[in-house]
Image 1: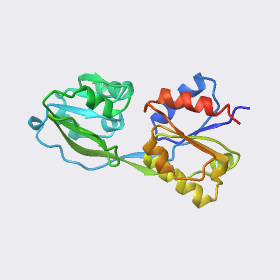
Image 2: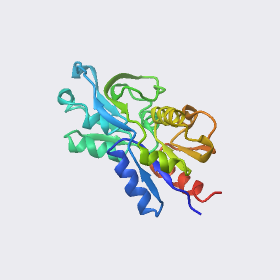
Image 3: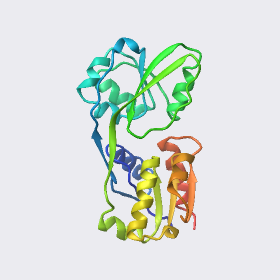
Image 4: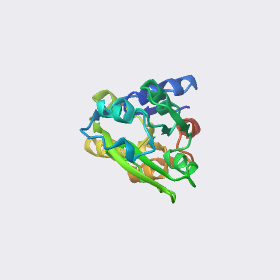
Length: 228
């Protein structure tokens, strides 16, 4: 019997995940355990950068009026949704990846570039190729939300939890401890190994994608939900 899959990522990513999984015929229970909030920041001199590198559409949606100073800078986007958000906001997208921001950065190796990374307050550490400089600027943050009574009830029946970030892994694990939800009833499907490590121990099963994409996570969760 197929097991339910729980999605807890913030909007608008949550709705995108719901559409993808239901189109695949998988049972999905969705509740955002984070809200995205803008953080105060001051844009630097645009002439100090050649391009922007962006790992989440939230950087565009919540970057605020300071983004206007970089409107003429090309964008290297982590994936399609981020690229679409950038173009909708009036930016020109120079490249678009499909396997994480590190992969995008690796494709730029060999060039001499000064990149401005617009990101969340918590973000993945990147390995920067020689000849490239990356200045990091937090423009948004994720504010955790408690598990609702309805979600708690469903989680106690077991299933598979999708984890898209290390912050989500830590918050979900802390909420399960607070509510005394048995980890042994829940399996974890994580977007990457760093995320699965952040979830800690005691789960029924913990697996992660070899490539950090929602399509890979869908395939992983689809396989897991058929297992006993």
